[in-house]
Amino acid sequence: MHIQEKKKNNQEKERFFVLAIELLADFPERVQNIFKQRFGLSGSFLPQTLDEIGEENNVTRERIRQIIADNKKQISKKYETDKLKKEESAIIFVIENNCGIIKESDIFLSLNLKESTKEVSALKFLVGFSRKISVVLEKGFLEKSWISSIETLGRAKKIIIETEKILREKNRTLSSDEIHQSLVSIFPDLSKKAMLSYLGSSFRIKSNQFEKWGLRNWPEISPKGSREKIYLILKEVGKPLHFLQIVKLIDRYKLGEKKTHPQTIHNELIKDARFILIGRGIYALSEWGYHKGTVRDVIVDILQKKERSMSREEITQAVLDVRKVKEDTIAINLKDKNFFKKDKQLFYSLK
Image (cartoon, rainbow, N blue to C red; front, side, top):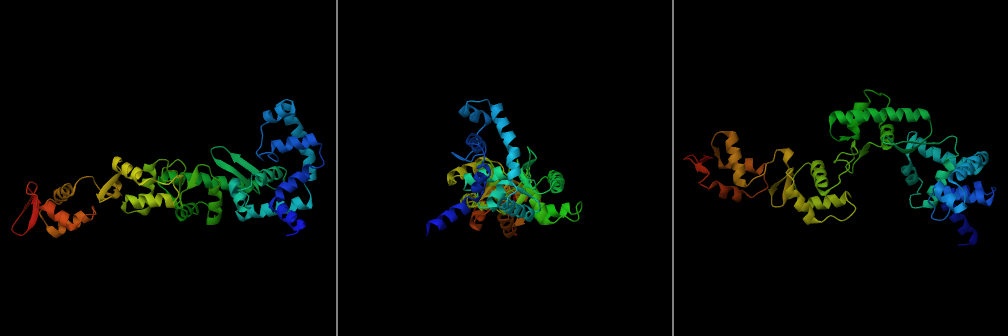
């Protein structure tokens, strides 16, 4: 590869950084350095505080703030170059393609900048001078997001507020289709794509790995400990699982940063009353109607609820509905004469 080609490739990889440096090129070196420090355009490419910059330049933080404010006006005048307009249009296209609002971290992903701290800092610096792109943040309500119009922001906030009401009323996680179906009765022209874009910028509403939406502090959305992860897996799968299957699914859906230890999961399953052992290593949720106890306890419970004698086949099926055990195990338990008696018709009842 020729030197010129290598140079061109490097410039393309650092296109925002190159533009940022060009924008500062005509300013005194001291002013350039202050802007580079403040906006993460040098060194570790991470922004420094006013106090840190002031200390390095032997002036007060207020003087640094004043230098930045005074020179920003001059930078704004230089912003209207063809190169910058072209990049600005490309960014606006990404925002508009996301229905007018996009979370800041998502736009970095869209532009393949996540791995480049230098390019991320440069883009943030450049967008700060744009008259067509606004960066918004409402702590506790809206994630830091980029918008192309104030009207879009207002509509997004209305959708987010209404969705939160729906989630609190239903008090459970909902699929995108369920939320959209509820919202179109209030906002008839709301597309599913727009809804997802608006919710993507919400701070309080999040989706989990199963593409279900809920409030960010719900355990089904942000499971913190092993027990919450187990509960989420069983709840979403909707059927009893062996504890080793639960371990695999926790890792598959990346519910934890580290690899899951089977023994840890098994211990938590044993301790928590929400989880019921229904077979060899197989667990279900108690909210599904399962109860703790031995096979004998299950048979006793079945006969008590029926309030009549039952055939061996009926009892076997009733037990298998709530326990993953062998039929021979049920037959052995029915032979316990301390608890069960069998009549001439071979029907069982409690002793």
